[in-house]
Image 1: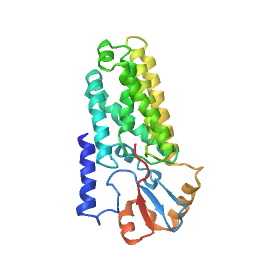
Image 2 (image 1 turned 60 degrees about the vertical axis):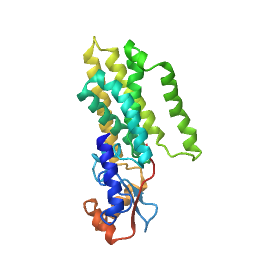
Image 3 (image 1 turned 135 degrees about the vertical axis):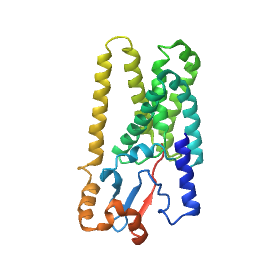
Length: 261
């Protein structure tokens, strides 16, 4: 929460007191959507295509507004407090970071580019859904009514997003929920026996995530990606290590946010 709040504060500071330091809405470490307006059809996560995978972790820490940050922080405070006491700080932190990454990756694979840690929060919710079946105290602290309310909100967000009433990265939510549920099921189901199966399944799961990351970095089926590769070789302004300077010199490069998780 402190990291997310710090990143949000830095973004607000830049936009208010140093607007010329970065382009409008560009945040220092998150993935941004670059669009070459001379060719409006060419846009995408150029940083990811350049190999800056680490930005996916930071996308989960950035937020689209104060309300977005507060809602996710309150959810994290409640669910994270329940789960950290069972997993310990190290496993809890690894779950949070990996779940945030996985939820961002899933949304990127379908061409949406979200920010927010609600995918990671949903992973904790999924883990707790399993854990409460094996832990009487947890079942008491997280009653069935709370589970129904949480799942009901996730389902309700889908038609509301489709109707244009809200702007939610629903796939990130459900992928995070499924990821947390699967890890919780593996950990609880084989807690005292066949631990090698758990380790093998977890390893296979994360190898699959590595494979999907490579796919997201090289979407060869995407015509925008192919056009970007071709233009990058002929236009030095598209080299990402110089994109800050390029945007100050070339007004045909614009940056903006599309969705938030």
